[in-house]
Image (cartoon, rainbow, N blue to C red; front, side):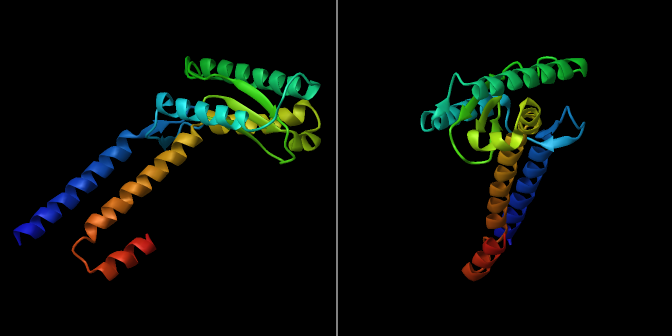
Length: 189
């Protein structure tokens, strides 16, 4: 009975810790005004994103000096400038201070573009026939930049962390059950 009380107490502490963690990790999204789950600061996210970006560029053919590459940079600079003006005008000065904007066109027939946390943008040459001009590029790039500005990368990592914590909680909660029950519960989780 004493051991059961100790396990019940551990479960309560774990649950309290989890609730506290979730409440403290809520961050207001400046674009929607809604609270979002975010355990990771820019100082944690950006170095990881920048390293992955550099690794990607090192293993792919970056297009430089062409009119298409210059157009990607020009559109990107305009979007970054517009985002900064909007954030400053809406009470978020300095929101982009740690962003290190970079715009690259990569030789690849994939129809895709993306923006890493911190403003590292890649456009694939395969999407250019679809975007056709600066306006089309701006639509796609604006969409990708919005993901980065809204901290979607940090939110996905936070959700993953929460899933891991939930799995730990499930393991603790089923620790006194049979191995079959534990396995069934973890597979269902």
